Image (cartoon, rainbow, N blue to C red; front, side):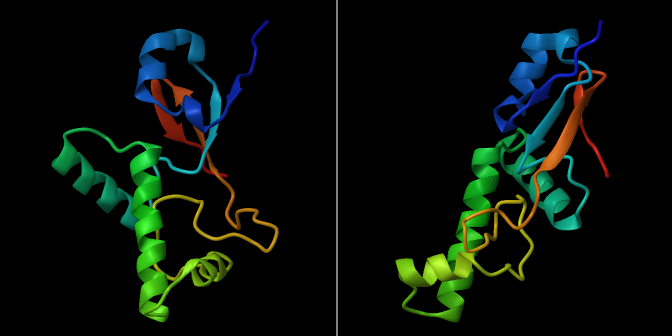
Length: 130
């Protein structure tokens, strides 16, 4: 009988696709970064990264990109951006688009955006559109 696999963001790697092969087919993965995200800003950033690095970005590079954007926004708003100002900035949605869904948080520290859901289909990750 078929089993539906549901994985966390650590599953979102090309290496896992190669190693698991057909056994991963149909699996669903929740991840805050998906290179398959069709938003223009994400597509452009992924393409620029691929040109520069010769490979697709991982979540680590995507988080670094968004973290730098957050820091830049904080410094633009408050030239003496300190830890407190940065924490307050995290509690408000960012106007600049980012490439992950972990960019703004509520007072309890929960993300304001849900993660992406990707499915493994024909040995590739595909974004599941609600």
